[in-house]
Length: 428
Image 1 (cartoon, rainbow, N blue to C red):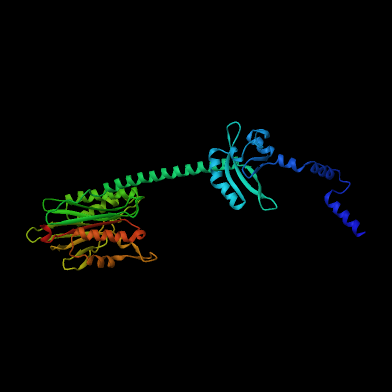
Image 2: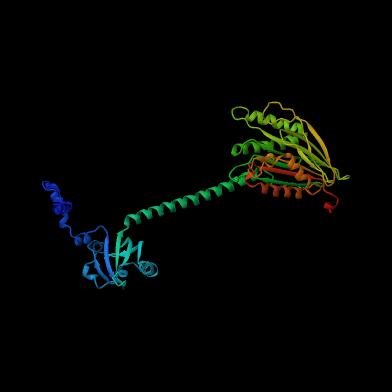
């Protein structure tokens, strides 16, 4: 009984239960699919080659892809004869050596030639079949149609090229924008500083970003035969609107100084112009420090008169190596109120002394490992004290190097203007 049951169970596992006509039909259809039929009509190509590459067997699927009869290939052609020139080179230099070393390779991308002259991209996997003695007998190769994959890769390549072209165009546009911004920025600053008898002058402008128009400004210009006017300031905001305010500020101060060179009067006129122009809807204001200088050819001294509106105090660097701030108390932001109060201060630069004007980009630069600390006015005073007694050019050069050192910590533009009374030796 046990043996009979085992046999019944075994046969029951191989055939459907009696009584199910549909199941029996499916089973019958499966029996009709011989291994050879499955080989011939498989969705991928199959071929077997001798170890020298001669084709020994090939299925109908691959023959259909090639567009060639079986008798034209079996025993007559080698697998490499089916490949393009590039494919044959790759087969000889890569696929064949790997196959000899490993006994199998998979997923190799090649191209096969069709009888009509076309090319078919394929993925090839090959394995060596060994005999009982361990000697290689033949190579079995499976060929997958890679047209969909090639189409996808070509689409990706086109998209990549389009993205690269878009990136190049964006970089070119950015470069053109930066050039335009640089030209516009330069138009808001003097091309060069005038040569003044008995006075040395140096300036520097550092943008925090080449993609933005800055709002810092400075200038040095003649007022009459003896006096010169100078100013430095910072407009609130960035971009074209700030540039418009910068332009208005610069030319207003120049015109005001020619009308009345008194620094208090010049700032008052600027305050009135900005408040009248921008108080409604889009308030705009700035900080500025304005001054006049006059050189005494007998003593070599330079008399300075200054007034400021909301601007950091100027630094006076003495020839004896000291540095101190020159406060201008009472100055309000320019353009905020219809009538602002300004006061002036005076100082004298002796030979070797320098007056330094700066915007807050340098004092508000972020320092430290975590970029959380501000550089500050005290640090600036201490740094410039180490260069007191040097020429304005040397001082500005040292400050430019300091700005370089801030790196990403420099968030705002910085303008520097240094005016000095040269020593007797520097005049030679």
